Amino acid sequence: MSDFKRFTPHLNRRSFLKTTGMAGAAALAGSFSPFSALAADGTVTIADIGVGDPGGDWTKFKAATGKDVNLVSIGNAPSAVVNQLLAGGGQKTFDIINIVGGMQKPLAEADLIEVIDTSKMPNFAKNTYIDTYLAEGSPGFDFIGYDGTLYGVPTVLQADSFGYLPDKTGEIDSYGAFFDPKFKGFVALEDNYTTTGQKTALYLKANKLVDIEDPADMTPEELKNVIDFLIEKKKEGQFRLIWSGFEQGVNLLTSQEIYVMDCWEPMVFVARDKGVNVEYASPKEGYLLWAMAAYLVNNPDRSDEETAAAYDLLNFMLGPWYGAKITGMRGYMTNPMAAEYAAAHPEEFSKEEADKIAAIDARVKDKFAYGGTWQNRWPTHVEAYEEEWQRFKAA
Image (cartoon, rainbow, N blue to C red):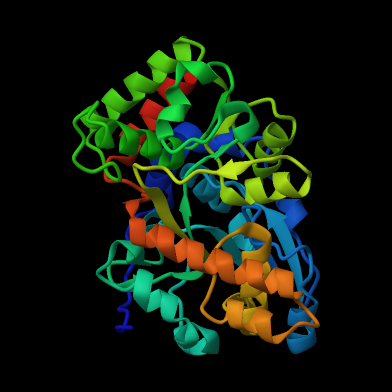
């Protein structure tokens, strides 16, 4: 992997809050208390969107380092992430934030995250998936780097689509299911323009319903056409609700309140574990490709010893046990050592679990080979995205 150059942040906090304030303050209200993130000495605090937790089991990390892990919840909407760090006290209470990547530009320019030193993570060099999918100069690099500088540690790779209940719908292979009158009132969309908005744009472009050059980075006019389409469907009663939060998404599937849902694949895994027959679609239009990134928060109060512990946790999250655990639990591809580790450690992973981990790893590779559109967490016209998404929600 090529060397990463350093970048000097230049966007101040005041201008950033102005940019993100439209939706961020509302998203922050009632969702986060800085006191919930406070941890005792010797503990690394990681804010996670709900899928990076290996079932609460950090014993291997503690055995290796003597440090505990305090995992707290954080939202995944771009403006909410920034506001939690700035206005919510997260910058001084979080050591790491583990979210969907692609947030380097705003976070770095607001001086909220640190440049990553890969020499402090031996497992980084062992992860060949980084060069394969996230190399500098490729679309995937935008999930971990900015302007040639590395800011994010890739913990998972995934290609998203949507979940559905085949007993209610039959087999589905298109995002058109979101808008099919047959499922009117039984569709749920995520409250996130980087997922719902971009998947809708991919569908409209692939089916030649709207002229869109790049679903990942639309012009204001293209975006307006997409939102107009969504508003029309919303007013027709197509969507039951707009969901936000991992648990809410899982509950919608397990209650079978909806039949088709724009969601994350781990929600499908949890719903299946609860006995619900749920499928994750293979849409003919392609997938929403992305990587999760763990960012080292620029915490001015953190000591050198605490920073070293944070790097130890980042290295652990790039390791084979954590990778195997997350792959098996969440359905994500993690690192090339995960499947091999699971197969070689029957005392920790049964043969059934190891086979499942290997199958997931192979399936995600096939998804990336099929392609689609890379998710864009901070599009060129981000203010227009924020405004248009609020227009959709308010309609």
